[in-house]
Amino acid sequence: MHQFTIAEIIRGLKNKQFSSMEITRHLLTRITQLDSHYNSFITVTAEQALAEAASADKRLAEGGAPSMCGVPIAHKDIFCTTAVRTSCGSKMLDNFVPPYDASVVASFKHCGSISLGKTNMDEFAMGSSNENSHYGATINPWGNNRVPGGSSGGSAAAVAARLLPGATASDTGGSIRQPAALTNTTGLKPTYGRISRWGMVAFASSLDQAGPLARNAEDVAHMLSVMAGADVRDSTCLNRPSQDYTLGLNKSVNGLKIGVPKEYFSAGLHPEIAVRIEAALKEYVKLGAELIEISLPHTAMAVPTYYVIASAEASTNLSRFDGVRYGYRCNNPTNLRDLYKRSRGEAFGEEVKRRILIGSYVLSAGYYDAYYKKAQQVRRLIKQDFVDAFKRVDVIMGPTTPTPAFALGEKNADPIAMYLQDIYTIAASLSGLPGMSVPCGLVNGLPVGLQIIGNYLDEARMLNLAHQYQQVTDWHQAEAATPAPAA
Ligand code: GLN
Image (cartoon, rainbow, N blue to C red; front, side, top):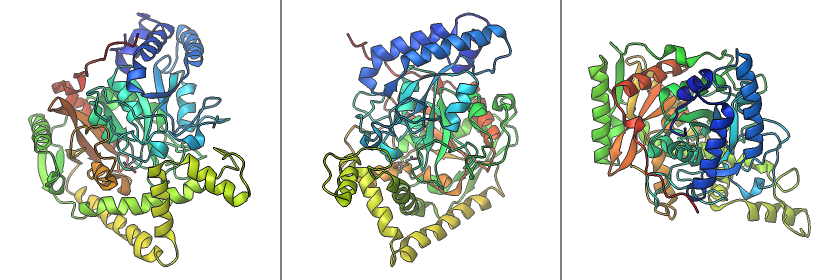
């Protein structure tokens, strides 16, 4: 039963082949047997999941239930969940039990989806390997010594290991697309503002965006239909109604203009990934699309620009974690200053501290103009590259990552090498554009992803494109070997 996709579960529940209770129990057992190896969950909420499955089965029996009713998923531990710990991968929030649900969580509850728990992540979503989690690294099902990517590595690994058919995730600079590429899953970062950020712990507010991670484009469409939509509680959430994204999945690709940025095939790209991307582009040509070489001249500036802006925003967002209002508090503080210093010093990990220091520096008087203001100006140029490109093409395609999954520990000593994992994903984030990663092959037995960058609010077209590709290829069906169940 764990092999079922979301679409298959929806069908199976409707046709009464199995109940929500049956599939929920099955997946919970699988998580118990296997997740000690993957470490893709921080918290498993078995009791709550079974209670939700019981009510979903009732709703399904009554008829007229929303399509995702009874489907088990899980939430990245960045989304607040009523009465369930929301750690954001940090010791700082290890004891934080929110009194409310994030809008995304509430939307899934509202349609009767089951939450199996909270997935592992890099602390405060800062990272590209899931090694920055206070709860230990997550293992990529594609290799025991391989990272699943980050920061949504727990969600991606859980889907790849068939512990669940889909999970929520978030992307600030690549955290949905990069782990999707490294685990052979399909992930979408929608247009900035497409999904409410309310109740999603803030990292860099002008970049953070929630999104779905699943096995294929059709499942991602099912999840996005639940997640997207206006929300008065998030002033940056766009005032666009939700829609059923599964309805646009059977459109022809004929005549579509695909922009291929020459800067995305630079020296740092693994040559075998370039081969896989070119093969994927050929599939689109066979389907009737036209390839057009384009240039995004400011691509090289995206990573440095991102690390100034994201760190600046992180330093202000994370100032709320002071050991007073909520979060970790050190033992026996001698005075208020000692309390702040030790609470933050003891509870934040190394990468989070690095970002806070960089962020505070670039925002400080005297450096603001040289770094923060300059970065904002370059951000504008990066965005303009895309605006110009979209005058000539309908979508942009290229690699999601420069390399396949790297080894655990390989990049820990070199933060810059880690930051370069997002070299192809960050520019779309800085521009607020939607981006997707779709499985497109294996390199040395490890998955790689094709990135699809769409114009603003063009998620329906991107999902259709990914779906059309998945109709003529079967890379998304390749499955990682499962380790022996724990005794
Ligand atoms: N890897 C990037 C970072 O460390 C992006 C993370 C994200 O998208 N949340 O900031």
